[in-house]
Length: 146
Image 1 (cartoon, one colour):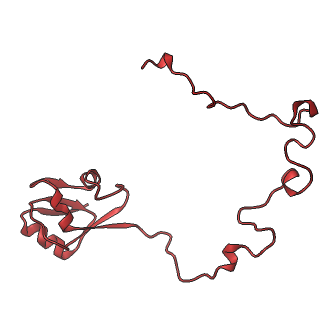
Image 2 (tube, one colour; image 1 turned 135 degrees about the vertical axis):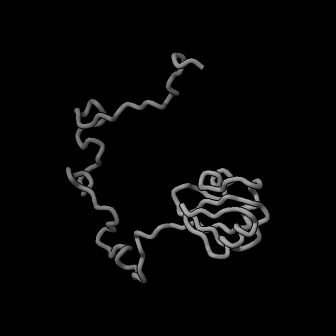
Image 3 (cartoon, one colour; image 1 turned 180 degrees about the vertical axis):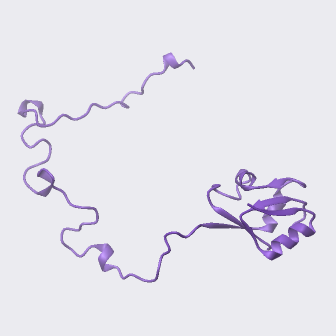
């Protein structure tokens, strides 16, 4: 493939609609806004969530509890799922995403000690449970906090 041979697909480039240039253009008089009403005026329209004067949904639904907006998402991985790695390998955020045990490397990872670890691994994560550290060390590996 040569860059000089690339062409834009048909229908990908669309001309901007030019309105308010006389009736002969087909977009004159009301400039495609219809006639009268709030949306036909300049600066007209309603804000997001407006329901025409009816009590909006965000006000009529009862509020319950508390949502912590600064909560950090922690992804939990059980130690038995680490058996998919080769013996003696390093388990970090990159290798966890490669094996699809972790969706993105942005989240914090905590290793829990549920299950048995049968391989010697060098595990690097944000936090560990006490039982997970014990099982990793018993298997001959290391547990390192990032």
